[in-house]
Image 1: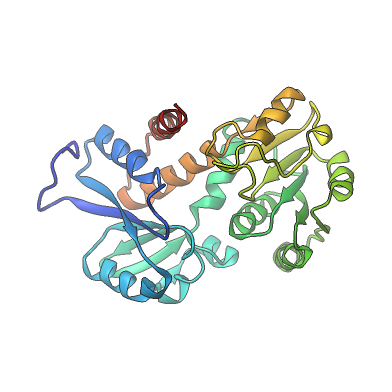
Image 2: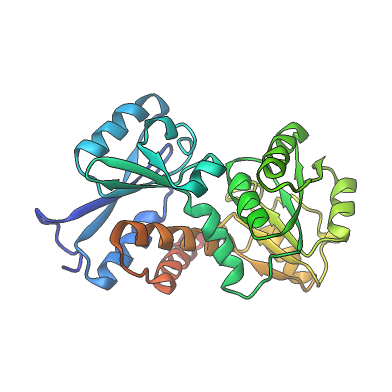
Length: 290
């Protein structure tokens, strides 16, 4: 089966989110299923917040093999699942669910996906000073996995109260005091002075706001690694400025493809064709830019 024809034995995976029209996951996963000849198909489902409990009951009853969870359901879905992987439980957010005969178990492949985007490029994490901009759901996953790997974190966010909440979570789980500041240029300059890695976990710079950046270009330098979880555009204003400064960069496409690959493996038990999945996303993004 090459996923060209849906049959009575085809297993269904999908995505629940609102909105959902912009997603690149169907193209990425269906290309992966086809390449391995798996009898699977991936479908997006638009699920409004008020419909979430009924939607999860329906996915369970229909025997949907697994699904991704995106905004706004990553936290609110948790009470309706039957169990959580320890990593998802610690982070407090789910982006992947596996359905084993009606038992819905939640995972967080965002965190491991971000870590893979660094480790697969031999970028060290342990004992590195890492500045994280943002304090939302993506920041929770990124901060937790980096702290678990032994990084030293500093948090900056427009509302410092949210950064404080995340810093407290890291301190409770790992005993690491995490400095946090309001996202202002002076605080950024001080934090970045000793940083090895900068991670933008906000949506600043996402299409169509392509010219925006959360960090002034003058604060970037050649010995910094700059990561942006925004993947559309591939080369955000932040990454373009980092490249101009001579810094190493990691695009949000890497995290997107890795989290997808890890979810794929949870659903199918097969090794994910990562290069194909990443290439599919890049091709789609290039088409959108033309």
